[in-house]
Image 1 (cartoon, one colour):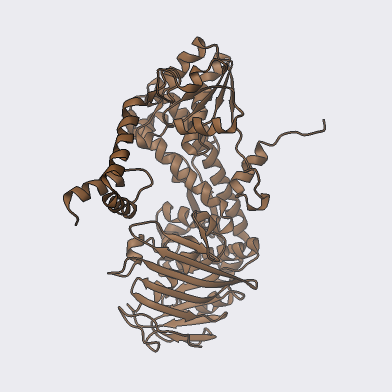
Image 2 (cartoon, rainbow over the protein chains, first blue to last red):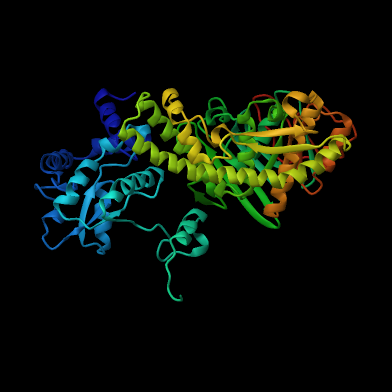
Length: 200
Length: 368
């Protein structure tokens, strides 16, 4: 329909997550209208990112050196390890400011449909770290969907014989929200994971 | 609960439809091929988020149109609800409830409920176990929207487990076993919950079905419906363990809620093999009616009854019984010709009289 060069850009943009054919088209035409220096800056930024960013040798978070900023920070508590699916989950947990330990990024969740089993995730690397770093507690912070829960269950079973404390983050209600607007599934989970405030 | 108005744009053969509906019993008249069933299908879509005929979205959009729009004004005990759906074969469907966008199907469910009777309901009795599972699971969703999540979870876990079984190519390595254990545990959790919900609903249906089938058959026969699960006595965990080798060899899950059946008996004999065609038709009708009553009882609001050309299949006696058995419900009936006077209609809408026809649409306004 369009000139080949335009169609190629639309096709590439359409491959990105969350971008449908319509959005890809709109973005491509927007890019076409931009001055050359603007598009050059964009492509340079992408090239730069690809050249400089790598995965942390220890936790597989994104890093610009051998170690990511978290692993390079001596003040972090090496005895507590938070296991997440993706680097963006590290960012999410970091934003809370509540966690002072280190991370381990699995690189996804167990999903046979997508051909992902424990071997495709960084599970072996996780096991190796437990001894090396003297980990006493592993916090499982996978996504609260079927695949994430299956991954957490798999890891819990794997770690159970090793005598390390394994915990899973609670799922529950959003802060600042109203109870009446919570869906039954979330509210049900929150009830399940209730905490004692008083009494025997 | 009643549907007071229905608007369609480019839905199946209908270009534009604007119908005001009577709260009582409405007869939709029109020759075959004029889209009577399509109107009922559109109404039912808003209650379940899918076609009751199992049609994919692209079949619901008029040839040559990009999207179809279904809108309805519903009255639930004096509370008006506006339901809107834009169906797109290429993109996502857009759904709005009272002009608020809902992103999950679950949030549409529960606002509006329908009970559909169609000529192929006979498959409920004569067809494969899958027909009966679909029937009971649809009923569970009508009883409570959260069951939609449960059903979806069982399907998802099964897809994952089956994918793993296929990838294992018949060999149970330690790695496969460890991952399989996890999917088994997930399937046990969701599968047993689904089976419990099915069992509970069937038990609640039994007295209702008995009462209804009494009326349909002059008390001649007793209908029962019970869940048959191969794994019921040993539990799903033990059953999955028992068939694991078999599952590995066949690359699929051979035991669980996806294989269960609802056993229907008429006077103690299997209805599928021992009942006459007429008895089977009455049984299917009785099950739908019992489901309708259970939903009305549990949710406190009577679903809208959609009867698609069912009178052509029923004798006068059953026709009269059927309509008398849904006394409080709004009923929309389709038929190709005027019906015998067994049934009293509050409104008759002639699609031909409204200027409709194949490939056109129903004109504005409503007939009473």
